[in-house]
Length: 160
Image (cartoon, rainbow, N blue to C red; front, side, top):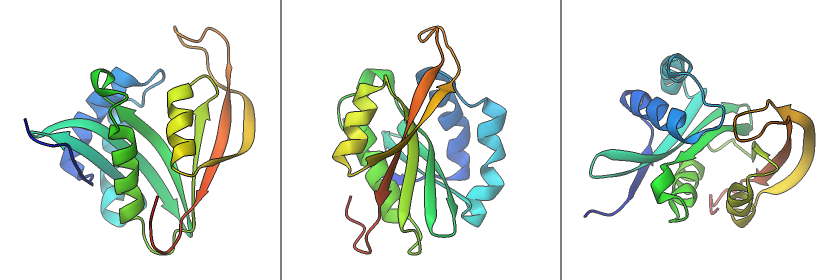
């Protein structure tokens, strides 16, 4: 079996990203919402990265850039491959391809998502705030859930 390969997201990845998003997220983007970012991938307003193996998409990240900031909007890893470093690999790919003017990357994460919190902290993200009751209830989380706001400065050498 071949190695995992990280690369920038392409427009033709979006249907597969949408499929993986719906399989791994508690409150996924719709297929149409994911496809709607296609024109903005060309302009650089949205950027993304994927990890694949043998042409199968296994992890993704979608982010939006504005001026000197980047906001990570969605990160997903195939359920059966979680804990194998693919989340870290896809985020590191995103960091490498950020426009040079980006100084800070932001994200939000459910307070209950301990694996994601460990990943983000390990990559240098720090908690900068909290949005109380931000996430709507789901089948797995029957109450509204807080979102932790995290940020990471990006240095000119682009090391994670």
